[in-house]
Amino acid sequence: MKDLTPAPSSLDPIEIASRDEISTLQLDRLKWSLRHAYDNVPFYKDSFDAAGLHPDDLQDLSDLAKFPFTTKADLRNNYPFGMFAVPREDVARIHASSGTTGQPTVVGYTDQDLKNWGDVVARSLRASGLQRGDMLHNAYGYGLFTGGLGIHLGADALGLTTVPISGGMTSRQVRLIDDFKPKGITVTPSYALSILDEFHAQGLDPRTSSLEVGIFGAEPWTNAMRLEIEQAFDMHAVDIYGLSEVMGPGVACECVETKDGLHIWEDHFYPEVINPETGQPVAEGEQGELVFTSLTKEAFPIIRYRTRDLTRLLAGTARTMRRMEKITGRSDDMIILRGVNVFPTQIEEALMTVAALAPHFQIELSRPDRMDKLRVLCECAHASMSPDARTAAAHALSSQIKQAVGISVQVDVADAGQVPRSEGKAVRIIDNRPKA
Ligand code: DLL
Image 1 (tube, rainbow, N blue to C red):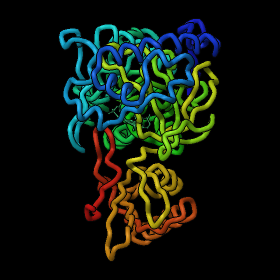
Image 2 (cartoon, rainbow, N blue to C red):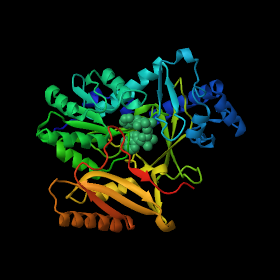
Image 3 (tube, rainbow, N blue to C red):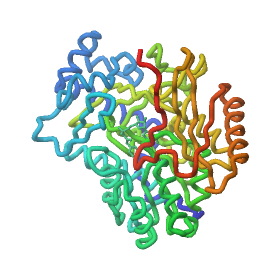
Image 4 (cartoon, protein in one colour):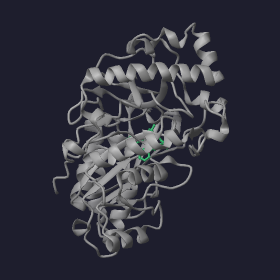
């Protein structure tokens, strides 16, 4: 793999500013953001008033912990535009979550917000090893989802040649990578695996493709998966994070030279990690739920938003801005099986240790005889696996899960191609338990 470290002179000065400079800027911006939300969004006025707080009560960054949280339910209750802080005519762009689990959440951006978004995505793409003039194959979905258009904004800001292919039509994805020879690809890690399968189906060697870096996010993925993808494509794989409520992709991103967690672009997004049960900030470096406050957003300021994503905050390395550790999972995706907490990422990690199995999987939950049961559906790495080899692979995976996670699960090994694929975020959990 080539060294793609960006030249220090190409970085935004704030990326490597001192912690004091960053904190000073954050405090100024935080004061503005609280005031802007309070003055322009009735929801924030009501929630601050109910807590007996006023934006002027923030004198120091640590005072933020006194302010109330915002949750997804608050956004749904204010559907569609109740959380906007500017007149509708000043909103240049709308995005929305898919709303598969209820009312969609709608977010908006002013022209200035779009510019800032483009800047943080450009920063992320540069940290991943891309520079002006490079070609990017952008396979995140275009549309209301923030992935495709968000990455596109950053690619424009950085001066890349963008191929806006969006998700789907996998054989065409591979054909265009082969024909156009992009240097970078932006896509969910699970869809990258489908693209990988398609390379093989077309008789092409992914290791000789033009791709030098993949920038993967929008769903949890493990370091074990990183190695698998890096080896399969002979390219770097870096992690990019974001969520629509806070902006979209580009809230945080790894640096290609370190790949040691995601630097949060702290001049625009203020992170906290809290204990999800008590709501109290955890000690520095401890794991908990990530909470974000926007520092510059005009159309859709967001104060102490509970992301439900679980991680820990770490000091900066390649940049002075703090890092978040690779996300373990969402609290919503945590399975409690006979008293043990299990995340799909733990199943992924175990799966990666069994060479005879492909990296695709789904988890099915059921409740026969009032006991929760977890079944892992995975598939053979090769089409021609004997029944005995499959049984051995299933056994290897269930023992690995028993040893690493401490739970007994059923493993079924299907033919290659039998685990349902997604063209965006993978569906990892099928919950067939009776609804309470
Ligand atoms: O997924 C934005 C995005 C697009 C990020 C493309 C990166 C790349 P939403 O659809 O609002 O936005 O989903 C946000 O996805 O709260 C996390 O649970 C999850 N997520 C996003 N990035 C990562 C990541 C986009 N790198 C939700 N690792 C977030 C783990 C991630 N989970």
